Every structure is written in structure tokens, then in C-alpha cells.
Image (tube, rainbow, N blue to C red; front, side):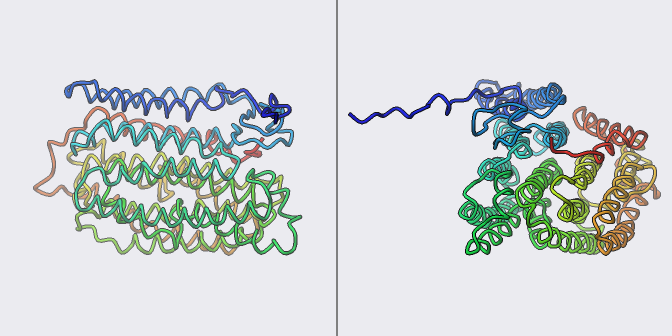
Length: 510
């Protein structure tokens, strides 16, 4: 009789380090809990689902604390587990290192602020609460999984878990504009995913592995007849992640999607979704395709220059009197900011396999950008989607006007938003240190250009109030919490920028 048992079957069974995978697992569990709870809660108690989601995201953030002491890993090939596997050469699918924890902190904190902003959005727009909170938490779970993923299969799955619920969130308002925005987002994203999957298949065919560390080790020794296949596969894979970061020419979905989505969803896409895409792009490029660093480094440098230039040029063309001018300006601003975020990743392509310090500049700048951009969207959710409606806001609501001025000046890199200035200096230094002086010059020019539309909006806040000023503007409690947390975090980081900038010293991996 044929033996059905696999020899050494016990070696195929491994224990899961649940503490290591706790951040995305808790988020996913709360998403399922909220969906089930919505079935049993009476209508008058359904607003509690928002606060349950906020509590779940806070718990997921707390689960990061035990992981800060060292690198841990799970779902590894071979007999090694934990930190030994992460540092000893074993291929693992989930690794919780410095890079992972910092990106998970950004993603989960951004999702928490989005949830606070969403409580007001769900009520104001009469969105279905169970579906909304389930989709938001599911997307956040995928975004939290992505920076810990260390093989291409897990990366693709995590990216789609983060993206698919986002399509539904954009169109959840069920109006014509929301449906059109969701369709454009969906079609362009599916196309990018198909291209990325084709690239992944090429890389696997050339290297025989999906784990990033093994791909990096195999690429220099690929058979001559497979080198072109491996290179094309690397390019196509990077294209898929470049779409998620809204880099030019994969940015065309951003303005219409942000405009058609609820403000809270646009804020989520601009920060959490972008951070997830950047983490995937950084992992694939720096860890998996580092042998091709000079090639993708130059390509990303060109993409960064095009992205920041086109984003700022389009932002300059936005009219302040159109219905959605505030959201469209922030959308084009986020495209330009994506260009700045790509600069250190491009610089990393010119370093050795051990010198990955430039990535710290991307992570630090992403954290700074995330805080102030979410704060700016919170003010938009409170006041108006049209920039002209902000004229005289200081007279009606001084606190909201001062907070918005701080967020805009931080995005521009001007005092008192000192943290924005430090972030741009760190990115600029990464370009210079990486030998990309020409890119640093283009970035400096774009920073100056962006001052115009940021300062123009800021000036409106303090202009004389029109006769139709919204003197009765009231800030809902969850939205006030979102604004307060974003503003307080921005002020603390401006007073003590070393809290974020220390990320730029030392390696993020290991």
C-alpha cells in the first residue's frame, strides 16, 4: 500500500507567534466583530460601532509595544523561528523589524484618526455604519500586514486586502460622483494589479522563489537566458506598487477619486493607503531587487521628479471658487508629496545592500506628512470642500483656522510647522548623499513653487470675514478629537523633531 504520510511531516508544522502578528490580526478581528454586531444592534445604538472601531484600532496600536525590543518573525521556511529566523538567513513571510513597526504605527494611527473623522462623516452622509466600519478596518488590516510581508505572494495579498475595501468605501455614498470615482479607482487599480502579478510570475520563473531575501540572493546568478525575464519582471512588479503611491504617470485616478469619496475616505487614501503602497514599493525594491538598484534607482528618481513637478503644477491651476477646490488641491498636493517620498527610496538604489539608511527619510517624512495631511482633511470635513468658504474662518472659529494654518504651513515646510521643514531637509539630504544632486535641485524648486498655493489658502483664513460667515459653526466631539490629536502631535513633533528624525539614523531592517 502506498504510504500517504510525508516523511518528516513534523518539520512542516510550525507554531505561529501570535504576539508578532497581533497588530493586523486585532484589526481584522474587530472588523468581523463590528460586522456581526451591526446585525443585532438597534438603530439608535449603531453609532457605537464607530467608537468600537476606534477602541479596536487603539488596541492594535498598543499591541506594537511588546514588539519594540527586537526583530521577530513567523511563517518561516525551515526549522528556525522568531528572531533567529529573522536574522539568520531563514526565509520568513512575516517579519516584525524596525521598518515594520514604524510603518504599522503610521498606518494604525492614521486609521485611528480617520475613524474619529469618520464618525462625523457616517452620520452626516447617512452611510451604512456596519458596512463602512467593516470596510475601513479590513483595509487597515491589510495596510498593517503589508510592511511586515517578506515574500511577493503575501505582499500582493496584503496589498489587495488594503485596496479592495477602499474601492467600496469610495462608492459607499451611492451617488453619481461616488460611483464614478469608485469605478475609475477600481479599473485603474485592477490594471496595475494585473501588471504586477505578471511581473511577480516572471520573477518567480527566473529565481525560483517568492521570498524577497532569496530573490535578492538569486538575481546576480540568474541564468543568462533568464536575465531579461527577471529584469522585466522586476520592472512590472514595481509598476504595480508605483500605482498605489500615486506616482506619475499612475496618478490619474487621484483627483476624481478624492473628490467623489467622502472626506474621511479621501483622507484615508491620502495617508494610510499611500503609506501601504510606499512600504510595499520600498520592500520590493530595496530588499528584493537590490541587485538591480542602479536601474530602479534611476527610474524612481525620474518618477519622483515628474510626480512632484506635475502635482505642484496641477495644484497651482486649481480655482478656489469651484465646488470641490479644497479636496482637489489636497489631492494634487498629495501627488506632489508622493514625489518627495520617492526621493529617498531612489537614493537607496545607489547604496550597498547594508546601507539602507535613506529609507529612514521616507519613513520619517511619511509620518510627518500623515499627521498634518489628516489634520487638513479634518478641517475640510468640518468647514467646506470649497477654498473660498475659508475666507474669514479665523473670525468665526479661531481654533479651526489656527489649526488649518498650522497644517498648511507644515505641508509647505514653513514655521511654525517646523516638523515639515525638518522633513523636507531630511529628504533633501538623502538625495544629496545618494549622489542625486540634480533631483535635489528639482525638489528645491518644487518646494518653492508649492509655497504659492499653500500660502494663498492660509491667507484666506485671516482675511476679513464675508457677511455670510459661518458664525454658528460647531465642532462635533469625534471631529474635535481628530483635530486635537493631529494638531497636538504636529506641535510636539515641531518642538521635538528628534522623536521622528531619529528614524533616519541606523538601519530599519534587523
